[in-house]
Image 1 (cartoon, one colour):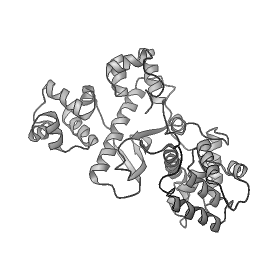
Image 2 (cartoon, one colour):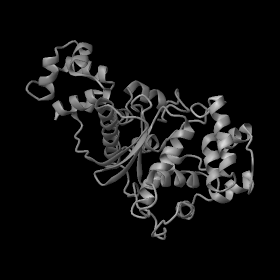
Image 3 (cartoon, one colour):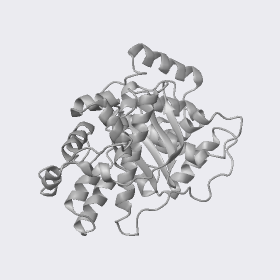
Image 4 (cartoon, rainbow, N blue to C red):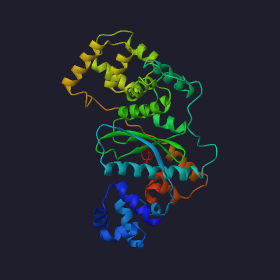
Length: 355
């Protein structure tokens, strides 16, 4: 098992055999033999490999049988095989830690993801997506207001959410997949919060609309419509914008972004989808945004990134109930033992345990 783990760690780090060998002070042939389990690295070499790969040595001995299937990337450009491999291996490694934690925590958690009953059986038009998104919000007891932490809510509903730093140089937002019977949604860790939230809602749309869309509807467009409706229900969008507008002030959109976690561009789409802006008015907004360079980079402070804390919270719960020891807790959190102890003393607080 040691050899495949070294290879998995190398691929997750995006390193070639030569790159890893040079950084660890061994030959590329040696790395190749380690991975094929023809020879076994010494304890000293294993420590160097762990340091280069940014993992604890326990990582190499963790059992893994994670099989990803039905993987669908939400891309902006073609990903290289190397970048795709980095993302998928990071997803596997994070899922391993999730499943290892689940094996020791009380049986009351986790739950398996399942769509609620009562969702419309078919979606014949894009406008029908509004009702489906509202039904899902109701089933999840989200009310009609802004969703404070979308990652935590999805995890509460049984979806494994992975934030990965490997986004292929901003070439993909995220992906949805199945893994060992679990539903997984992955989002780029480095994107602004509003972009992360839209991607999470978009991928949820793929799950919610699967098997329901009429053949005449484009799935990506439908999932974008679902994402907007899920983040800002029709009733609330109409309340804050009005029933009909010819112009939306950029500052108004900026403030709405920070209230709802939907980008300024997303609000224009939302207003057009609901008929609050007609096509000509929406086009004027796009032209103005293009002239200002706001289609690619919106003005002002970015919306804060999603900051999930459920996994870390459960690690500390398992630690408090003596279900795991400090060494295992540090391994699950992916931090040195000394840092874990500093966090337990509350020397490091606030964002320390959030992805």
